[in-house]
Every structure is written in C-alpha cells, then in structure tokens.
Length: 239
Image 1 (cartoon, helix red, strand yellow):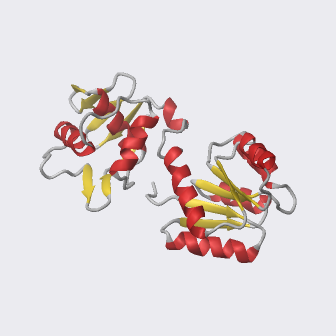
Image 2 (cartoon, rainbow, N blue to C red):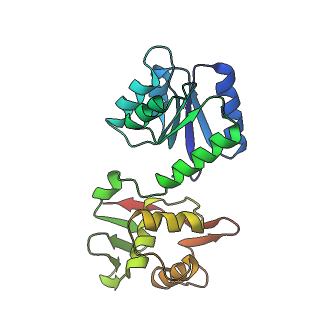
Image 3 (cartoon, helix red, strand yellow):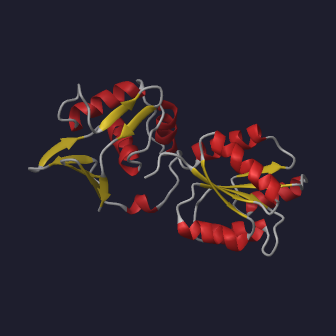
C-alpha cells in the first residue's frame, strides 16, 4: 500500500489544472488529472485514488452528476471547486455527497489545507470500507482475530489484547507500509469510537510491541520513523 495519498484533479481549465497539480506535488502528494467525466472514470479504473478535487462546471456531465454517480459505488472523498459561491449551491454540492466545497478563486495553500483536513476526517478517520467485513489478518507469525480481539501465534498460543491495543493493531494491519503520525493514530482511534488513550501513543505502541515483536527492543514489525511517526513494516494478508 502506498504511504502517500493520491489526489485526482478533475478540472477542464488546463492552466488551472496544471497549477493545482504542480502545487500538490510540491506538497508531497501523488497527483493524477482529468479534464472531464470520462477521463475521471478512466483514472479511477486504472489505480486507487484517495481524494478527488472536482470542478462543478465541466463539459459533458457536470461535477454534481459525477459526484452522485461516484457516491453510488464508492466512498472516495470529494472536494468540489466552483465559481458559484451562493449558499444554496454549496448546500446542493454537499447533499450530493461532497466532503467539502471550495469557491474559486482560491489559494493553493487553502486547497492543500482543505485536502489535508478531509483526508484526516475520512481516510484517517475510520471510513467504512471492505475491511469492515474482514475476519482476521495474518502477518509475520501471527493471526489477528478481529471478532475475538485476540492474537494467535503459530502453535495456537492466544494472546489477549486490551481495547487500546486492539484498536491500534487494527489501524496498523489495515494500512501496512504506511507512515502514520501520532496525531493520525489518535484521530483514527477516535474515529472508531474507541476509548481515548489515557496515555501517550508511544506508551501504547511499546505495550503492543512487547506482545508481537520477537525482540521489542529491536522492533521489526512496528518501526519508528524518526520525525514521522510509525510504520507497520511487514506484509499483511486478510481472510
């Protein structure tokens, strides 16, 4: 799984589209672009997209229609951009399923801040997806039983998990190879209506490491990324 979110820019103004793409790339995002609904669908079919920045006024199908169609089959976050600044237009856009609405003209800094906020509320906020139907995950020498909230080691040794450890481990196994900051981990646990940690994330990770690592002093599963947070550094399969 990629650690950097991929943003799809759907805008028929080539100059503005290019400006947005260049700005978001400088901010560290992966970027794809489309000038109309057909190109948008082609991009969505070719690769995973984490968020769509969608202009409302497009040739062919407009952004409202495209958003409504997308919502019928996907929960990918959408930010509308439009020259229309009437409150009714904004309400209509949000009712169609958009996560945010940004009025033109806007600064690239504002767009980037809106994208970051929406990603935190959605991708990092426990949006329901196919993972909600998974019974368990396998990684290293472990099977993580989601329903029973247990870790089962090879040899059928069962290791119980506290609520905080369960929530933290589930976040990691659903997002392997992805660097996550402490703030993102806290947002994710709250997004699942988990009990708010009464200690720091670092303390909870230390406790989890003592249960899953062969040597918690030299962790190979949950690795620290200095200045960045943590990453679940092993392969994960679901069942």
